[in-house]
Length: 322
Image (cartoon, rainbow, N blue to C red; front, side, top):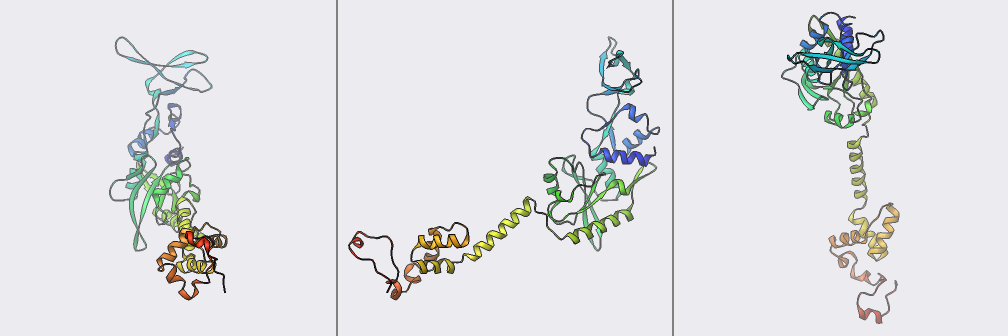
């Protein structure tokens, strides 16, 4: 197994939660490889409970480590074994290594010669690394981990809907539907990263080719993803279109035709397929100057009233349309 093979293994593990390389696995790596990756910033000593493989059994099994402190202060390490019951192990067998997310972000930032330090947006999940020149302008570069987690949509919302960003992921390229708006250029580090000695190196030509292809696909799709932001934009547009249809002139015309706020509202509700209140009709009439301004005096006799507005009206006959 070469160091580049190990690099891909580590990048694959960067999308896992709580992945630990134990002593048994590290023992199969080239000599000093774990220390090299730790120095590079990709690995760190595991912070969880210690585990160790059983040295007594042919069929390998890993068990939690129990520590016993002797009277002289010396520590001894034991695991439980189904066959040997209790087995003492060497301290170095308890060591495990896990992915260092911030170290990975810093190593990528250095490999791409980006200015400054990575800026965490969502701790342990998303970083802004800096900007690179692109066709006379610049584009922002981000690093995203664990794109398959249940909260990936909320994390992805920090990338923005414009699609101009370049998002680096360790190994697995996520479904394009997780991104708000236009899909950004997503590049798997496992396709462009290698090790040269003890340095992480990014193949700039391969990176550019992947970005160009990603941009071409995004242009070909030409569709805005309907996520929560997209749905809100659509709702706002629909409301604006409906509102534009219900101008004051339309409301006043309905009032003049039916001679009543209530009847005009009922007719508009049926025509528009949405509730229109009589108060909405009345406000449109009031903005025009009131009933006297909307219906000329010569036509006022032609407006039939359905409800008497004054006690004396009950003694009179309603006017009929001539």
